[in-house]
Length: 302
Ligand code: HSE
Image 1 (cartoon, rainbow, N blue to C red):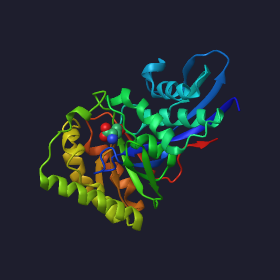
Image 2: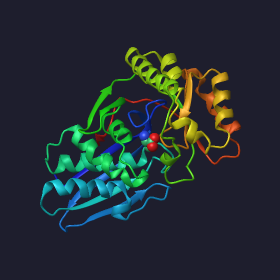
Image 3: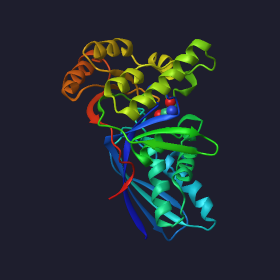
């Protein structure tokens, strides 16, 4: 095989309390990647479509870094061309860089018949994610690859497990973050009370996913002591809009990944109302409102 075309979904990393260990795949938006093997020995990135600025310099793009990481395992020179159609807004906490890294690692593994298992693909993709936040993180890359809800059970060696999810209606206010990364804002020390809350929310959320209880999924997505308090400060109007959507009947609301996008979980019939609240309450923020849902489908060949 000399060429492969794949679709890679957007993801909500952390999904409330699961900092770096939980993520959910979405039905839309998604990116498409046409990856081909070439005669020369270089890695080339082209942006075919998409209205957002994406670096084409190989070492500044997670697709390029994932390709370099993977080709090192091949042990012989190989040229690769990656053509990207961007559907996922960059720098908005919806897993755009994770999708690039995962799709490239997946595509090359298929074409070069490397027989890497999914944990190895996630490992390669997650180390490419280092350029986005200084630290490798696997949550976006894993949910993008596998679909559904993922739990990173261990980072070294990489060990990810997937849970099938029910239809979870999701409304997102897609907001670009001002900083390249917001990981540095998260505090390093926590009280015992905070840790107990966090452990119970993470456990309760996994239980809610397993039992398919939408109300409980929202309830436990809603709470987080680690990422949310730090990142909320850099999203104008966050506390207010969260209060409003919950008052209107959404089951949960939180920050997607590193932000600044905000997502809410609600019944299907409530989606338009929640979207209108995002629209009206975040009036001074440049945003795009999207109605979507969870998806059990990860990267697929098209
Ligand atoms: N878990 C990562 C973080 C996801 O919170 O920084 C980044 O999208």
